[in-house]
Image (cartoon, rainbow, N blue to C red; front, side, top):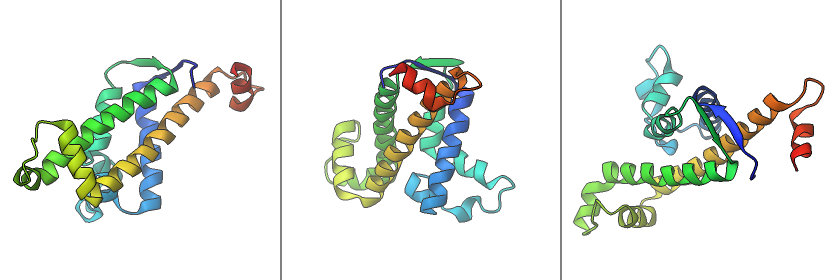
Length: 167
């Protein structure tokens, strides 16, 4: 997990959409991924794209990944960066969805650590979102790394053989 991988913002977007769709199909609940209920996007011509557009987590991750045309990092560093971003996105989500209740309990809504601590302790939905996104991010990083390996592999070798050469 220490080898550099390179990918474009477009590749990151396509792979995130794929991974998110896979998880949404398994869970069958976009709200458990931080999005809106299916009935809100059902009448849209592009309901899947609408689901992406209404999910602050997808929007947040893609905004971060599209800042550069080509990104180069290690899977470990990418995982660390995405985990930090997940915390920020969960903080914003908790402020938006639970801010009134948290402030009644005396939680400083500007303190990310305090907000997340109380929200994760008291609200099951935010825990579910956190757990689901941790799984999505893990799979996303894995697929970005595999995509990089496949791009480097010779036509007669597969990505698995190429990975063994780097080990």
